[in-house]
Image (cartoon, rainbow, N blue to C red; front, top):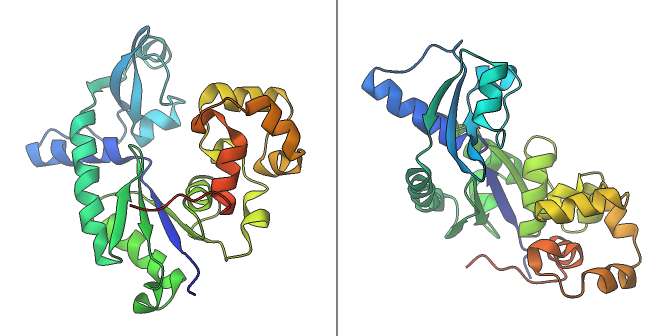
Length: 243
């Protein structure tokens, strides 16, 4: 039986890169040395949704309040994000990515998941396939980080926190995921904060906790707040099909 292989494609700058292309077509693109952010509504006013390279170099990060960042960077240019348009663009990419395999889905607002089981040989192996994917995405003007692993959870974590074009073999998840930050388990922010307060800063640290202890503490928690369930998904003990 062929081992399951899942590719995660993380598109960290999708919103700002898509906005930049629209501005270029209109002839209104700002110079590269002008800090630009895209804003969305937050609980206490607009917050940064995405930032160009110049803005990030000035320390402006997604989630920060726009009013606070303007105090730090007076020359900041603020535009509103087209989140619905970004999701629609990602849905189109889901279909576009089926040139590599028959099964692909949108993964949140910044990624794709592809089930490439049995397809990598058509592209010269997994390493060559990841290079081809990254190249084709770059031709669309998109920055991408990619990883391939036996499970959705493992590929997701490696694409975001692992080495460039990470490849995780069928029996390597324990060792490849261990050093990654606990954020790689796809948990909500309060749960990540709780785990860090407990001294569990890496996925490996969570793996080393006795299973019964995690079960008792998170028995009533939903999927995004349950590190044990997320860990089981990443390790292939809990099914997470690409539908």
